[in-house]
Image (tube, rainbow, N blue to C red; front, side, top):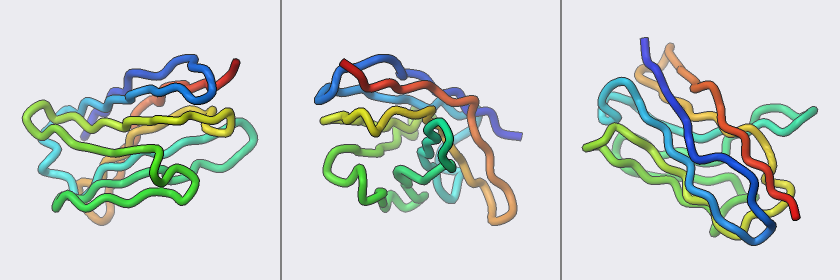
Length: 116
């Protein structure tokens, strides 16, 4: 079993920044990948950013050049730095960890609201 705890969400004005963190209950090096997903009201959950065990990163087109995913293996934590936030970034953001092909875990989510 893997526990993931997100933090860092909140209310921010358009153009502002937030940094989300996800603390894992075991070494981040043990995961094939770690990702951030988001789900807005009435919409499906979507992949925002992913970092693999080898350190490769990928992003949804909608957040490319604005968001950055990173991993701190010493602290078993993954971060999502979000800059130039837009109202359409408003959603619940979920951390995801994949320890093996058949297993996937999500955290409880953290709310991000972008509004003036």
